[in-house]
Length: 545
Image (cartoon, rainbow, N blue to C red):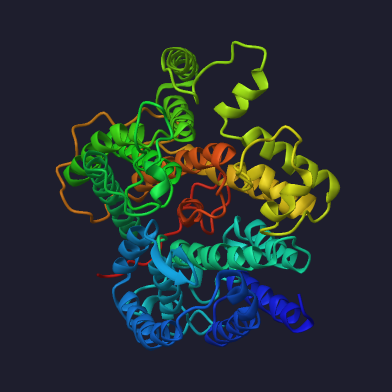
């Protein structure tokens, strides 16, 4: 990396950290956009060399169309914040094919556009006094407690921001020594920077109870639609993205459904999240509309999860079921559920005659286990070797695939060079610094989770049984009881985050998944300004749609 690119990288990291930790003022946002654009421009030759030339009309058309759309969306999201909530949830899985030389890149362009427009829609001048007209109160959208005048720096109110900011910083600065500079730059901009901005948008907007209800509704609705698309895909054989899903991964099947996702495993992860929210909503029974959506999404998502043939998805779902049993039935029954699930796994692995499920019975046990894990054991070994060779700062963001050939186990026979374990990826690419920050994030999230875990659906005090009354006769999404809302969505967010965490042990993509940041932000939005153990709740101001 040249001196100019290095300076622009440091400036970009500093600008992102200011927006994320202090306050997104107009001047700070303008500086961030300028230095980020300059950083991308400095890497344009390397990106073109890696991916080939891009049609000259494409960037011009993107600017000509994208800029007006961006600012138009920002104005819409400012006056109608619930539209932003809908747009965020709906665009998280959607990828757009972008021609790049002889390749085609499938990027989350709709989500990036919504995130940037949403971020611009909540930018406010900083006020030092609270007695003047508050932007949070006078603006059409209502910005919630995070941006109230006199509220202080963002990191003082949201306990997850400091460890997340540390991870963003080390991920960005590791580009100075990464073994895969082009891949690292793309991952830093498209995942770490974009999703940190998304985290802020979600935290601010979902501080409002009504917005949280709409987010849950859209998540369940989109889950039902995407699951239905998966069923149609299985019946017709149509593949929208990634033709590899039709290559017969199992002997007994011709394809794995992926709906509108790129990867069947990521589709499986999404379905697990939908199933968790559906179960919790059915237990809470907040309204007839939510009961109908939860029932529909649950009935569609469970069979479609099977059609993804995602072993990591079913492992994540099993972990979620155990947590839900613990939460609503008690520790003893949760242990019984865990034993029952273990027996089911043994039976399934014994009965199903597929190469990925065959239990090793022969001398070449290592080969069978390697095949069962899809080559992941060799990847884990290589990642551990990278960490041992570069313990402090790792091989740099995006460096795992480039460095893997040097640390490849001698008996590794697979073509896969991307790590499928997020913990191994973090250790190998970001070293002890990254792992320390990750452990700090998990510790902080455990405090948030403990705070949310104590509430019971129905709004009862901690330790009270779940609401056993008939379903609420309401059919709308207007707020009723904030404590009941936090109890329902709080438990769902905690269990969903835990399921994603478990899934990332077997398929990776923890920080590269927008749903991870969304669940972290949803959890944080319900505990902003509240100390763990403090019964008080801070309410965001309500915005109209």
